Length: 312
Image (tube, rainbow, N blue to C red; front, side, top):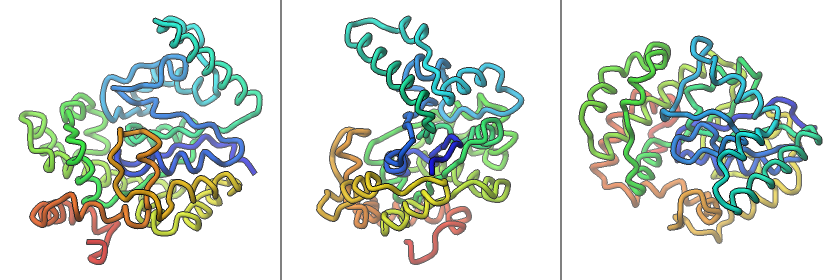
């Protein structure tokens, strides 16, 4: 069995969505595409011929005119060779474009199903599901784990990007508008920024759970504790074959012999290879007790929908 519905794997950044997407992409007939909504590191005009200028761009039926065709072509695996060639600045670029073109053409001939891994597409999940009948997998991550990861990487966020999207504020983030305006007006500490980001994303996740019965919601911690059974269930819900390559990849990337908290460049293969069972609790070492208390107190009204006292 191969799902003919394109798949979106999303959630917050630092939620384990890359790990989840990569494992699912080992299923036969799946073609992995990495973060086309990214502002800082887009895959290029050949893959997705649209420039996203704001983090967490929210596409709706009211503003989708310029987004529809580029995303439709990407999901149909139609490589934009003309656009890609205009971005070529070196022989290495030309080789990359040639390889991408051949890869897309081969998967299109084979009838492969695209899997888009992109946390930045989270607030466009509804539109993507409705417009292209995409199957949406939302990865939920413990708030303290998310905050600790942002703290480790020291990733600041431009909250003004939310204010520049009135449809997003009106449709999903209305309850948080005052806080967003405060954080856009002046820079807050990295812990506070991460707390608010988690609330914005997973507060919206609760809305998605109410509105969309077909969306799939999976906790990163549940997959980490029992990856083989967890991914078998996930593949079944996506109508994908749980193949030997998936099992091999899961065992390789989740093995107890892997490091608990690898210190490597974000996005590298090494960072995906972790002791998944122990990785769950990294936040206890990265955050102080006062920081953990602060996170819990600030997110409890939302996090209680996903996590119990035992998870703290």
